[in-house]
Image 1 (cartoon, rainbow, N blue to C red):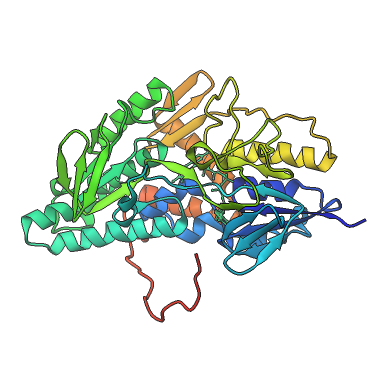
Image 2: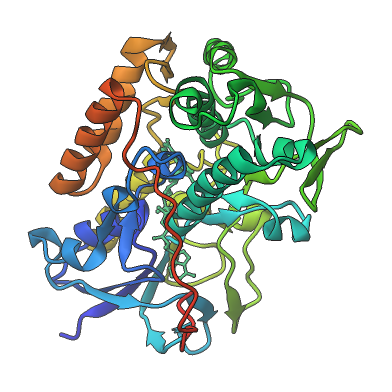
Length: 425
Ligand SMILES: Cc1cc2nc3c(=O)[nH]c(=O)nc-3n(C[C@H](O)[C@H](O)[C@H](O)COP(=O)(O)OP(=O)(O)OC[C@H]3O[C@@H](n4cnc5c(N)ncnc54)[C@H](O)[C@@H]3O)c2cc1C
């Protein structure tokens, strides 16, 4: 009998976990991704702050599909732009790929909330290349700032504004604060520590708003210890010509703005159907992750939105729901009977704010400080894909813990020439 063909868009947490678990005797499985590696977003901020090398947190998809559980899975390189429901085909910049069943596991992209020119002026952290650009911007501004003699320009070069007080914003602000507190004096003798200004801007009244009040308070204190200034209940209005203005009427000269404030589902053009992605660019799914109105199409992970009593606005957009949805969907697809509804099991949340400082919520339990930081490290090490990556990350952390001078603060920009002959992205 001819096997059914399942195409998965995205080799992220959801996509790869699903591909691993699908019955290859029953289905031909194809994974399409615009990048030929799986990446680990929780540690992007460490690439941006020169704590880790990009390759430490990326794992080649082709290497992964050589593993026993992935045997028979086919990988295709390309960015999906269109889902053609009439022909049941995906369209990438290179080809059309037919499917019997489709799983959308493409995650999210940056959301600038309609402020469309922002993406031309801010640095972001949603992908490895974005984290590398952010790292180069930080290192470049420190080098430029150290030799700048005009006091106004110097101030703008040495001011770093992080937008968004969620885990990603808190973690990157903490890493910059650590740089200010421990690195500047050692490595940039021409910059006084007080000249470096790290500002974290958050639209609500607290940082880590999705975590417990105790975690939020502890994070605020830890940021204070790292000399990070907080600006709460404020949103960014404009970013132009090295100046940021805020909704409270104030403004600041700053050349490095790091945007972590919002996400939206990766957009696709849908043809042959009237169904569209809903709020936040997420596809509305039922408890079996079936996209409403699209026969044989499923969505998992950040891009899926299933509202229930516990999560009226959908599951949190973190790795665990993606992994758990992949497992449940694989079981349902393998059995051919959709009898096992998805129910999210919250295993807790955590964030780190520089060395020795982290906050953890597990059920009703909250703890912080060194034990939380140790747990944060173990959980992140264990979640990384690939033994080599785990060993390299452990080595880097060990080295950086005892020796503040990370050897990775190298300003490496790709050469601009020759001009690309085809579009990669
Ligand atoms: C900076 C940052 C920090 C985070 N920290 C944490 C954390 O500490 N803990 C936690 O649990 N979660 C964290 N998250 C969230 C977590 O990374 C996501 O919830 C998780 O990755 C979602 O899994 P997914 O499979 O839905 O999507 P992803 O893992 O994002 O995978 C999506 C895949 O789809 C591919 N793709 C996208 N668009 C296309 C297209 N058009 N065509 C082809 N391929 C495409 C991408 O290249 C990617 O490989 C963080 C996210 C970010 C950005």
